[in-house]
Amino acid sequence: FAARTYTPILWDSSEGLVQILIYLHHHMVATTPGTIWAATARTGDRCTLSAPRGSLDLPGLRRPAIFFGDETSIGLARALKATAGGFDGISFMLEVSSPDESRKVLEMLNLPDVALVKRARDDAHLSQVEAILLQAAESTAPWKFILSGKSHSVQRLTDFLRSKNVSTSQLDSRAYWAPGRIGLN
Image (cartoon, rainbow, N blue to C red):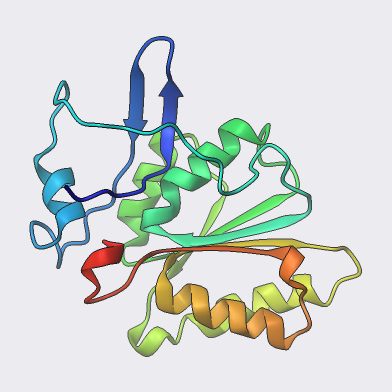
């Protein structure tokens, strides 16, 4: 038994339908419990599911908001669009390994207005992300920040925002994975 948490992009309990978008890290496929399941799961396979718990209040999301994540956050971005009544007042930004591949997935999911930041060695790209977050943090509007994806990126950006006096009530974060950590993959 290995429980994993995924954000469904569709959950229809009356019809018994669930859709989950999973990003398979090329370097982890078939090496961790989550990627083994995701790589081998097929339509019609039986598995035990729990209804979404709503750890993030997507319908009640305060605007303006900035959503930051990575490829593993695309499902959450899609769920946010579906439950929060669209993207008005929400800016989306993803750190990605392949902007071209990510753009194709985003277009298929009708998420065209997502800014993509290509990952750089030593996470140098996060300085660009920090500059964007700083503009929001220094504005007079009480921005909401949703940070998800790679644990190191989430922690770095959380620490950065806190150093700029962003209150904890303005921050929601969810680390989905960490290099070398099986429990988060």
